[in-house]
Image (cartoon, rainbow, N blue to C red; front, side, top):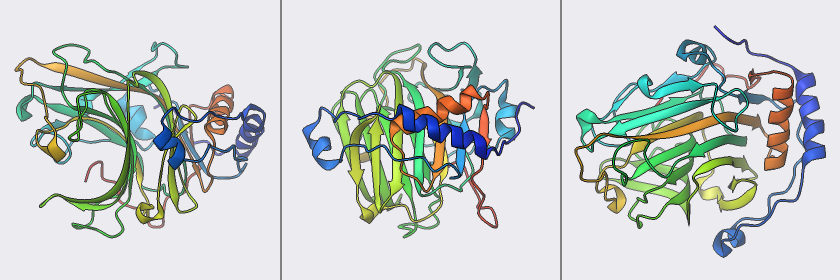
Length: 334
């Protein structure tokens, strides 16, 4: 079936030492707005015994992926085109992807703008993450792999708790979203969004969140890091500060780690939705690795050093983050 969970404090200690050697001063963003809002990312010493979750996604098949606690969404529902399918058909594993060590997991979602011809993709890990450092290395794309371009497609990395009731006071969500064709009522230019949610309800649509947006193409490989610590949520892209969100939206509940790839419906916060074409098109997103360390706000250099140390030990999957007692339900979706 592939891997076993590995509990090696010595490896984490080695990773911490490597992180200390590799840490470097990281530059400010080009955006005056986000630079003013976000302090420079400071290198933090890695706690050798802090619980860690790491996966480099070098799986032979879906069964091995699921054996390590990953779930693939199959139920219909929000977000995306109403009535669209969510399917494991869109999850695949590739050992030959350039600029990766051992390959990556790929999400592939398709649409022709109609629900019956739309297949969206999402997978998630156990709901046991809250304060600490979340990170992933992701390959974003600006164009579909085939078919006409222009759909308001969402490529993501995020953590989320279930919405137990409309305007749930304990709801928690922290998002990276890349929109290569625009959306959320903005123009059609590519942009990266970060959003931290306090709560929301679907009917009538009501939201309480803080968000940040930076225009520009993010096609290619990027290391995304977010830290939940000191009553603020801080987001970084390739080691540069992107945004900081306040204590008003600070996560209050345990969350699952998620990735999804979906299509924005017309009218969502002023969105234009899919392009007007009956031709089928496919969009893709690749994830090289994912990492979490509990209770510690790490700099990007520290994260990358720990990932390199784990890979240097040939560890494809490490999970020392304890489940809650009893374990929390972890639905892949809302």
